[in-house]
Figure 1: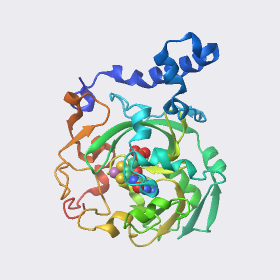
Figure 2: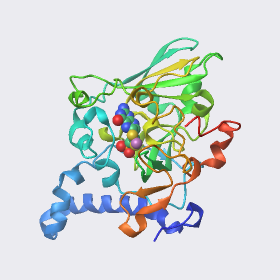
Figure 3: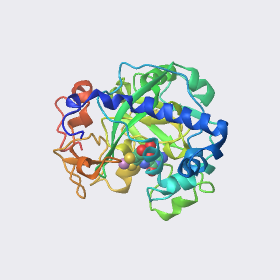
Figure 4: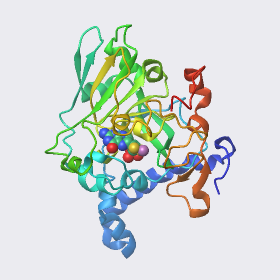
Length: 323
Ligand SMILES: Nc1nc2c(c(=O)[nH]1)N[C@H]1C(S)=C(S)[C@@H](COP(=O)(O)O)O[C@H]1N2
Ligand SMILES: [Mo]
């Protein structure tokens, strides 16, 4: 099946989204026509909680020149049932069960630190700031699994422009929503909350860094970081903080959740790099979630396959020391 470099892959993979949307339309139509007329398995499908979970709000999107082509999309089911969102439990199946209580409206994002003037953006304002784009990205977790996800959003740089950072600002920090009464699972782990991540300013300004509001053309399900998250496709997944409530502009590199937790294993840069192994996981290969077993294992690409766009950010840097 799909083995080889992304550029070698058949473009038939690109139809996955259409197939998905057509199937949804079919299911809706079928439900309206009367579920009883269908076979038992179809009825089960329509009535299953998994199908119900798909009934998200549609987002209006435009095509993006920055989308990744030639990859088979990971299914909506896998993207929304195999998650890391430690605020809602440490098992991959926990977030879909527990994140429903995250209150995603009203929602605001505070802008603080080295900016012309601190401000707060309402989520509805953010959604309208720029046209929303469909952008397919490879998603590589440091745990050596990967997916291909059709996100919806616009470049983080567009938002940063609106924040009017001062020239002294060299880093940007993201803070996730945290309320221990809502996220009762946080006491199961020894992490410092809120979850926080950061980027160097030039990384954040790279057009691939995405301020993300949706996936598969619909608003983000809570377990994937609703209502707004960051996606940084050339870095390990943990850099992509979910459910953002604050963005801070700083002169110095901020501490991050995983570097505070274990600096030996999780550096600030966390660029996908097959030649620098994590102490517990080889980074040479990855397991593509949802593929048949014989097609799961694949080579990990430098910068997750985005080297052409981002390698220049790290010119002259020792990526072994700056892992
Ligand atoms: N707030 C918060 N953001 C987070 C995490 C988390 O536990 N909490 N996990 C990270 C990790 S390790 C990954 S791989 C991605 C997973 O995103 P997904 O569930 O949408 O695939 O979210 C990242 N963002
Ligand atoms: Mo991850």
